[in-house]
Length: 374
Image 1 (tube, helix red, strand yellow):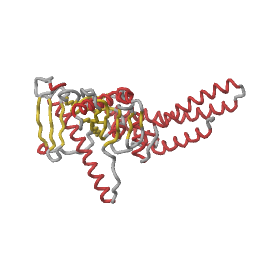
Image 2: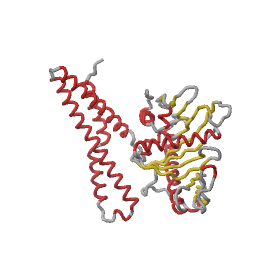
Image 3: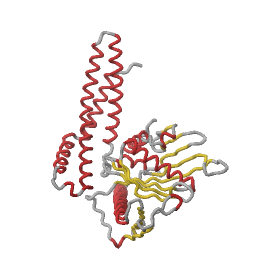
Image 4: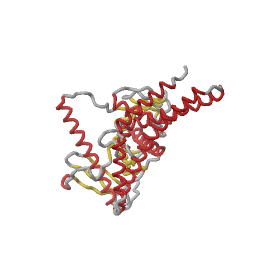
């Protein structure tokens, strides 16, 4: 069936107007002007960490505005190209112009999808960097190996996108794999984007650790929280925490540090435990652990407030299910998101960081409640 170019372009114009109404270009320009003024402060680089955060925020805001304004120019271009197709009388030239129009429309549709997804990330902390923690669950050594596979999957996803990643802590299992790992991903909207990955991930495969080559099911939990910022007010009294120091360890429990530089902080009122061992000094590990602890307390506070609001409103809708995705490697290959219905028959590509389809589907599902087709 021939493409209805007029209808496609009209729909793209409508989608663009929806994006603009949500983003509010005047507000974006005002924000960029404010950030630009702050970036010109003579003492900006007295605090390198704060300066880097500000310049990164400014760069992203400028890039986001440019992407939206470029969409407007692209819509004008495809409209003009359609007029040229209509007016062309020479068959070969018309075919060439139609092929160019096909390519431009496909590219524009993809960009609109990408920008539209960002309009759905409007939560209070969605624009933040993300702290991701993966813990092995039921399944013994297979679960520890599965946790390490998941760690590589998310690190590869970040690498493919050019995002900076910092591993804060890794606790290795005795035989293979890891008990847990915590890492930060530094990118605009990293938290909002990856928050849909939180939950229990289930793996079904022939176990490489079973001498009888039997099929095993194993589980790992993924937690995603936003990075704490100076403007966040989370008071953690010294009396509420217990700090233990110990030596960092590597794979198989081997010691990789001759000094007690690793730090474990226990928040006594909630029982939350945070360990850090990947920094060079005890002071750095303590600072990193406190930052993650504050992030978790911030999210706990938000969850409690949201729960209270639901109770007051009499809202008893089911929340996200704990088990959110299954990865089956035997007797067939299939990765399927239980919430959204999105699936892929190429597990190896998914393990290598090809997660955008799952993440986009999760963001859309969270916003609309509708399942999508792969």
